[in-house]
Image (cartoon, rainbow, N blue to C red; front, side, top):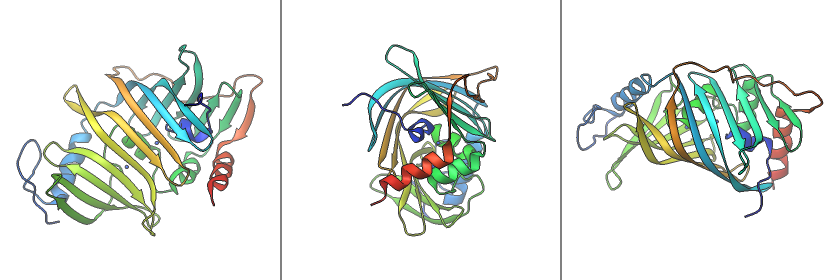
Length: 272
C-alpha cells in the first residue's frame, strides 16, 4: 500500500409499517417500523452530548491510499473535530466544524481549505441530502434525518434485520438496515432518485460505553468519488467538559483554498 496522500474530502471522513420482528428486548420489537424507529431515536437522544474517540484508519481512492491513526471529538448536535496523525504521532491534517463553517488544514501541503458555509460543503459531499448534524450521527452510528418520514419497510427474516426507507431531502432516500433486537443500525445507504448510492456506511461491530451502543468499526463507501474509508475505533470516552476545538484558523503563512471549489474539482476529475 502506498504512503497515505491526503485529499481534502478524505479529511471530512472524516460525515446515514407492518412487519414484525421476532423477540422483545429494550425496544418495541412487536411494534410497527415507525414505533421501532421512534424507540431507536429516543434511545439515541439519551447519548452523551460530547464524545471523544481514537481510531486507526485505512483509506483508498483514486488519489490516495494508505493507513494511519487519528482521533475525533463530536458534540451533538452539530460540532465535530477530526484529527489525522502520522505513525510518529505528529499532525497530518485537521478538520473542524462549529455547525456554521467547516474548515480543513493539511500539514504536508501547508494548505488551509476554507469552508465558511458548512451547508455548501456537505452539499458537495453528498448532494445536499444531509447537514453536519447528520454527519455527527453517521460517525456515531445514530439514525440520521431526525424528522424523516418512513416511505417503505420490510423484514429480512434470514438476516433478522428490519429494512426501513426514510424520505430524504432533494429527492433522496435513506435505506437503513436495523437490528431490532437491540436497536442497532447495521447499514445506512443514501440514494438519489435514480437509486444511485451517494454514500454507504456499514457498522459491523459495536461496543457499549456507559450503557450506550457506539460503533467499534465504521466502513464508509463514496461510490461517486471512488473512496473507501475504514475506521477501527480503539476507544470511546465521554467528555464531561466540552473542549474548545471546533474552529480552525489558517496559521501564519498558510496557503488558502476554497473547500467547496476543491470538492467540485475533485468530483469532476472522477467523472467518466
